Length: 249
Image (cartoon, rainbow, N blue to C red; front, side, top):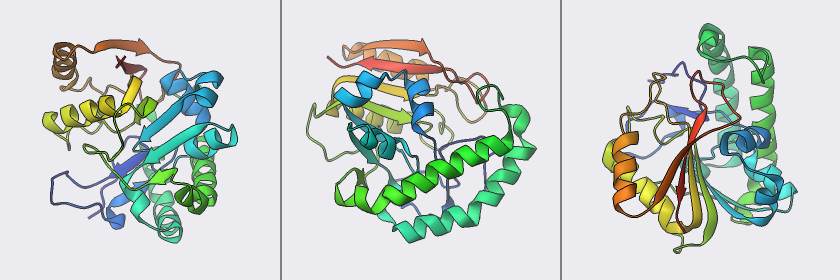
């Protein structure tokens, strides 16, 4: 049974995570952000986008990869939905967009309508981002910019990326993914980064600071990582305006 959560997330899903469970397309509601939002969420400069090797974890059907590639940047995105074909993902977008739109209208008081003025504008932004993703998907798969992988285990070598990002997944889905999953995932992101890991937002689906944040900070400190909680230029989910920066170097 599909359950659309009343929070505007990049990948809304209705499955609990365990080792034996695979992502099924019928349980996924694709929902994509664009480059401008990524820049604000993660405080990314034009220089960052064009000079740093970036890994996006759980990018889903966002246009981030496409737009960074247009800027001649070096970007790789991983997500479990990249196991599916272009037509399958497009079909799922077509099936679910109206459901998400209805949920957004019902829950619009949960969000801050500042940078984005209305539900209609938001839907247009999301559909445009996903259209750009879909148009880029086949080519991106061939170029290995879209790779079917998922946390907490990545196949990449140590220190291969400059910056590793997680948007609207870790901490947000604390209800579905336990502390061990968060710990393993974040340490794996640190393993493949030679500079910095950034995670946004730090709230869970109930708009509360994730219960896992403080334990994670203690674990990272014990392992010698420098951590900072930084206010960002992005707030749409109420209170979701901070990122966790983990300095690896």
